[in-house]
Length: 318
Ligand SMILES: NC(=O)c1ccc[n+]([C@@H]2O[C@H](COP(=O)([O-])OP(=O)(O)OC[C@H]3O[C@@H](n4cnc5c(N)ncnc54)[C@H](O)[C@@H]3O)[C@@H](O)[C@H]2O)c1
Image 1: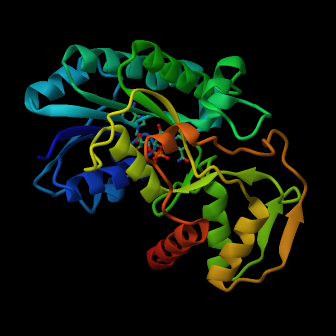
Image 2 (image 1 turned 30 degrees about the vertical axis):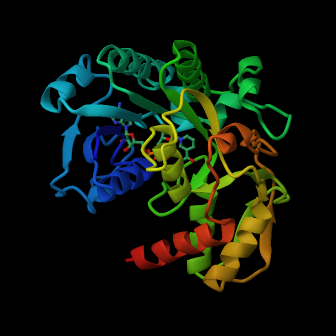
């Protein structure tokens, strides 16, 4: 039976993919976004869907969940993706970041629990691990580090609040990529830039030696993890409680990334190396044993995910 699900941040990169899948699987989606970083065109595929209702609102609005529950009494799942997503912006606006990325989440969680909503999933982040040097990164490491930005602090406080409450879960995503990703994203913006170089027939530009590694996860696998976390994967798994890393468990270097994208776009294979940028973390990779034990496994290979992303970018060119 289809559920009624709230997706905040439904006009964003990940939220639009999650919304589309929930609709495809027969659920009703209540979408909320204030377009702080999302775009109306990301919702083109579903804005007129009869099982979709959109509200242009901020998650900081007091009583938002109660108002939505009144309009949609069947509401039984909350996917809280809306957030201040830019780390530099969070440094310039720490107060707003705390309000959106922690306080609004805390209030939404408390309200959802009181209303008896049975599924609550929050978008955590690898930024909660600060400069953690041990690899792969385990969930508990975040409790002993200092996060490097208001973004990381607020995400960490939200995840910790969820864990303490024993209600709902936080999925700590590593570097997500795929169609509709924001080219300025600190997570996977490098992919958009390489695809742009490639499609323009230019050489890839890498800052540093290119040996810095990240745990890149294709967006369809992120959606799979959301369905599992909410107990909506159709296989009887979940809903989950607590904190879970979501990644592949494999680190891929920026140099590998450049080579695969150059290949997919028939761009020159020679790379233009430039001086390393200050503040870049050298390596990041998730320990995924906790979510693996719940039955999650990334299905898309790095190469297949990149091929889909390049295809999308090629078709989206003016
Ligand atoms: N992209 C990644 O690699 C990555 C990694 C870790 C965590 N995350 C988290 O996943 C979530 C989704 O990220 P994304 O990459 O899709 O970013 P995105 O910017 O594309 O999506 C975020 C959406 O939230 C909306 N939003 C922002 N503030 C809002 C508010 N106050 N009220 C209502 N809507 C608001 C934005 O307009 C946007 O549509 C975020 O919480 C982000 O922190 C993303």
